[in-house]
Length: 419
Ligand SMILES: Nc1ncnc2c1ncn2[C@@H]1O[C@H](COP(=O)(O)OP(=O)(O)O)[C@@H](O)[C@H]1O
Ligand SMILES: [Mg+2]
Image (cartoon, rainbow, N blue to C red):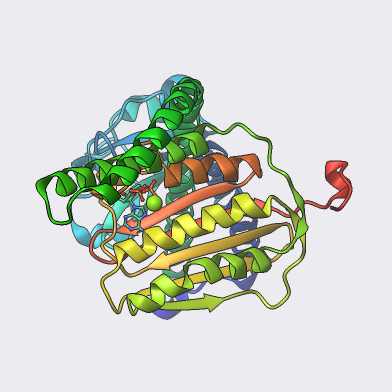
């Protein structure tokens, strides 16, 4: 047999492979649950190779060891293994994209418990690496009950599928992390809401005396000699009192527990109103404001005032983050299945460090000398009230993207009349 003939795989066999590959991709593409994805990958791989069982190890990003992520077809005690260090799985970068065939399980250094395997009827193993670029992210070990030969095509195919799976696993892992982050924020916000109610009470009390201070100091300023030290002192009192009022106003806004007053409208309309409010500030700072609004935008139930407030917050934050002549864009889109709306505010400003990104939704977190740190905390609450989500993607020195998405809700489905 020539080499070429040896490395060819029969079309029927390939059709089976493709069918399994399609199944894997189909079932894991839409999943957001990591464990579910790992189970499908391991089961389908064993099925495709008519193997006795398979075990998937996945890189634990915290310990840098490969933990068992999922397994099938093998006795519990065999798969119930601890983590292994990367050195044990890859000795050489050339192994990252090649299947390792283990025919002599008694003498292969990477087989830890040959006796166990032998007792389970295992006579051959394949180690299929799951690498993304040049980094090993996981490994599928396939256990076969009799030695078999594999063509180069088959081995290449296994690596390709495994690499695709690695990418999807990475995506799901990211999504899960983000979800954990959001859940953490939600708990944080629950705690803050009781504190907020308390603060609102205090804010109310302080608001009136502040108005009095402002009124009397402004009147006094009119009566003192222009340029005198007394006038300067009064100016400071007025300025600082005004600052207190802004903070109190923000605090009252934050603690406001009003249910949204929703009506049927389109997000594009709300975006236009918000742009009308902030447009001039962008113009004065020579910051380009790009709009990419979806041409066909369905109506949905929204509290126009509240959503406008969120958009103004995001746009002003973006404006504050960019230099003069910077660039900010606002985009609206409907997701392909027509169930959700997405609005994105992106800038090419200073960006936020990974450390600080965790804090930006916390009330009073601000890095600006004149900030209140309430804009995003209020926005978070409003979006939550619309059953939506707000996410942030940022890179220090490159820019920030805030993405809000909410479900399209009709007046009927909320049991309300269109206002
Ligand atoms: N687009 C952005 N680019 C960079 N940093 C941002 C952006 N948006 C928000 N931030 C950070 O989040 C902090 C909190 O924002 P916010 O809650 O609106 O309060 P404030 O604007 O009063 O500071 C800001 O002080 C800033 O550090
Ligand atoms: Mg702000």
